[in-house]
Length: 274
Image (tube, rainbow, N blue to C red; front, side, top):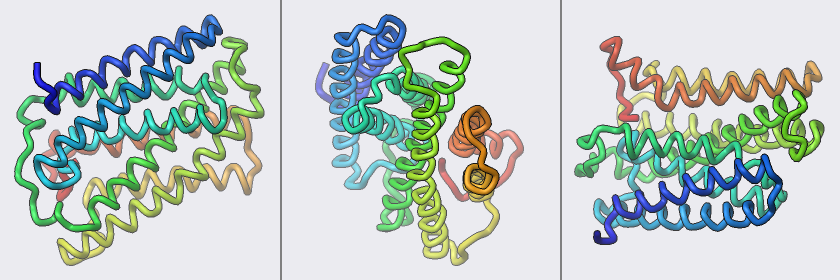
């Protein structure tokens, strides 16, 4: 078996599975050795996915962004990196038991459930060669990864509140991190929409034409505006914020995967490929 793009993706997927299991067991048993092994597996997964993405980039001479398959793998890469940065800077080892399962499920969708014909690298369209598109999609990866971390914090809060997994951080710490994760991701989500509008005007002659993907991106943005309103104006904390962060990420995933299926099911037209 040669060191091809699918090979590196498969290696990254296997290490991601191992890391996910190790962090979950660490959360249950509290064995620090398992957390260290999980971190090593996470790094190995990140490196393998990086190699696969680079091979694909060199093959088409463009950062691979042309399909749901490509973006899903970029999203997984961002989630693993986000997890490692959080553990490094904030010591949040417990986050691995929540954010890595999300990464694994998205990787499973890309590498197992995506039809083979959708994984084939086609020639990039002129639109994809625009310098705006890589910026647009990169902001999406950062924003979505931040919101995945917020969703993980929401799940952590509910589990901690119910009296399970006493090794999790305190409710106050989790609640504060939840707010910080959304505060970090929201400007990137705003940038995602702005870059998308610039790209749309550059390629289609209008900044906004109510494409289904555009509508759901706006809905996602408004959900997180609601989060800030509830937090800052209404003073909400704790469980309501945890629930809202989970709902917000479900909307994110609906924007990412659900809209595409809805467009196909209803026979609608969309200018977006993912």
